[in-house]
Image (cartoon, rainbow, N blue to C red; front, side, top):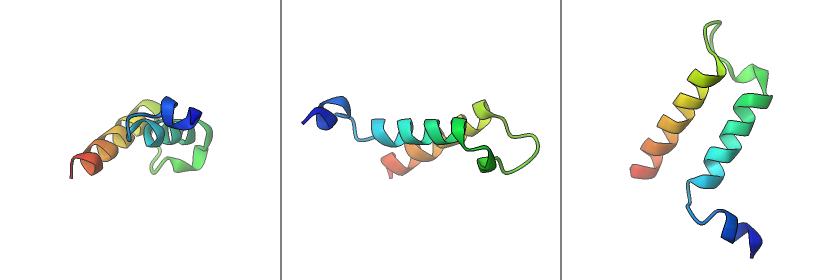
Length: 53
């Protein structure tokens, strides 16, 4: 019951999971110029596009 109350929006859990992965897993960077802010931007873009389609 508590988990459903915390994540009432269906996008909240995937965003939180991907943010934590980007911050903690260093091998997710694709190129030498990737940084955490850019990678979080891509995560939000992908999840927004996926949720709207």
